Length: 500
Image (cartoon, rainbow, N blue to C red; front, side, top):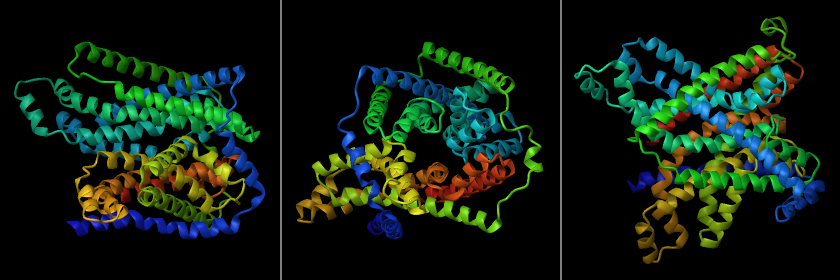
C-alpha cells in the first residue's frame, strides 16, 4: 500500500518536467522593454485609485456582473436539473422509455459542454452584436450541460429497488420520481450548485473582457490605457465580491423537510422555466442577425484553411492543454512542499488567490509586456491560473488531513519536508490527481481564451475566421475544438475512474 501511495505521489510531481521546454522558450523570447510596466503594475496593487467617481463606476459594474452572473447561474442550475433528470438512467427505468433517447440527450449535452462559454460568447456577438443578453446566454449554454452531468451522476447512485418499494403502494410514476430524486438534487445543489455561482461570476468577468459588460469590461479598458491603479481598484473590488459570496454560501443552510421552502423552490423553478422560454423566444425573433444572412452561407463559402496548417493548430491546442495541465498539477505540491512553513504558506495562498482572481487573458497581456507571443507563454498563463485553483483544493484537503503520521515521522527525526511529503501529501495524492483529471477537462476548453489573446492554437484561428466572417472555417474550427474536448473528457474520465 505504501508503494502504491508513493507512485501516486511521484505522479503528482512528474508533470513539472514540462517547465523545462517552457522555460527554455520563454528565456529565448524575453525582452526587457516591458519590465518597467510590469513593475508599475505590481506597485499599483498597493496603491489602487479610490475616489467618488471610480467608486460609482465600481458599484455599477459590480451590479452588472452580479446581475449577469446570478441569472446565468439560476437558469443553468434549473435547466441543469431538468436535463440531469432526462440524462439519468433512473428516469428511463421508471417511465420505461427506450435508452435511445437517453443516448441522444447525453451526446447533445457532451457536444454543448465541450465548447467554452467565451467561444459561445464570441460566436453570438458576431451574429447578434454586443448585447447584454449575450453574456447570460453564452454562460448558460455550457453551464446547463455541465450542471446536468453532475446532477445525472448523483441520480445514477439511486438504488432502483427504492422505486420498486414505492411502486408497491401504487404511487404514480411521477410522484415516485420526485420522491426518489428530491434529496439527491437538493444535496447536490448544496454541495455543488452554490459553488457554480462563483464560477458564473468569474465567467461573467472573462466575457466582460470581450465587451459584454460588467467589471470585466472596465478591467480590460483600464489595462488598454495602462491605468494600473484603476485596474487594481476593479480587481480588489472583484476580490471582495468573491470573498463575500463565499462567506455567504457557507452560512446558507437548507432544510429539505421544510414544506414552505419546498413550495418556494418549486415556484422559483416553474417561474424561471416560463420566463426563460419566453425571453429566449423574444430574443431570437426580435434581434436582427448581423453579418450572418443565412445558414446556407456555411456551405456556399469556401474555406481557406490549409490541411497542414490546420493540423498544426490542432497539435498546438493539444500541446497547450498538456503543458498547462502539467503546471496546474505539479506546481502547487512542489511549492508547498519546498516552502513548508507557516509564513510561506500565507504568501503562497495570497499568490494563489491572485492567480485565481486575475482573469487569464489579463495575466497573458501582462506577461506579453516583456515576452513575445508563444505557445509556452500561453501555457504558463493557463497553468498558473489553474494552479491557483488546484492549490486551493490541496490546501483545504491538507488542513483537514489527519496529521498523526506527520507528527510521528517528525518525532522520529525525519526532516520536515520528507514528513510532509510521506506523512501528509501521500495520503492526498490519489484524490488530488482525480480532481486534476477533472480540472484538465476545463483547461482544454480554456485554451480558446488564451489562444485568442496569445495567437496560438484553434482559439487564434477562430478569432481570425470570425473577423473575416468565414463561417465555414468557423464551423470546421468548432468541430475540431469540440472533438479535442470530447476526446480529452473521455480520457480524463478513464483516469478519474481508475483513481476513485
